Length: 324
Ligand code: PBG
Ligand code: ZN
Image (cartoon, rainbow, N blue to C red; front, side):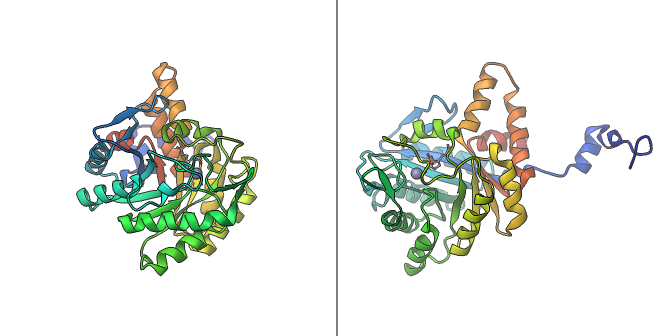
């Protein structure tokens, strides 16, 4: 395969041949749309750092879900912004909590749309941490029961899948046991298995009002410098019963996606997070790059690295581009 006998450009001469040899194909089936539910009626609060995204009251959220469904997007993932927060995040597992009611409403209206719920405490705790705070530290084991209760309350509300994002050790075991015991053995767990402590979550924390009030998340989320540790984190979640393993963020961690895809046989999800979205949107707004091209290139790259599915704020835009 040497020049001049072999000429790679022969396979790039026109779009038809490029289509024929294309190795990675982004599809609407790959997309999962995150949505933010807030209390109230007829509310659509713009999130400035995430153009095109809103805090939505349930009536508005249903419209967004219907739009996604009509475009062929198979799934949404729900986050909640409760009206009150307390040290134990009780609204996270309240029967009539914001996410529980949003799930119920969406499933009643659009039964075919897969509704995944993010299981965490940070949006519901007054301190903004993903677990129970003891003094200045986050108590791992004390958090597990609350996370399991949260997951179970989502399943009871009709969630099709739960996605724990807290990064406490042992939470998949605890959630699986709680679901199985209550006859929800058919509900899969998509675990945020390798979740890094990332600056790219900034816009999300504005959207979900979930920034920690003291300290940071470095004692539970992973150090961005570590790759082998991600393999250990994932293998633990696999052993504990995860059905889908997620890597988050996506674009700065393509090497991790690739290694995990090679090592494990479970479906791999990647979360193209809020900061990744904001960067492209901001640059496109300034006219510094072509937003649509950057979006499709990014999502294709995440899939090429090994993601079977992508959680992305671009889901609607990408679905439109792909359906064109
Ligand atoms: C909650 C959670 C976060 C994200 C998803 N679930 C924020 C965090 O861990 O601080 C981030 C999503 C995004 O940035 O798009 N634990
Ligand atoms: Zn959290």
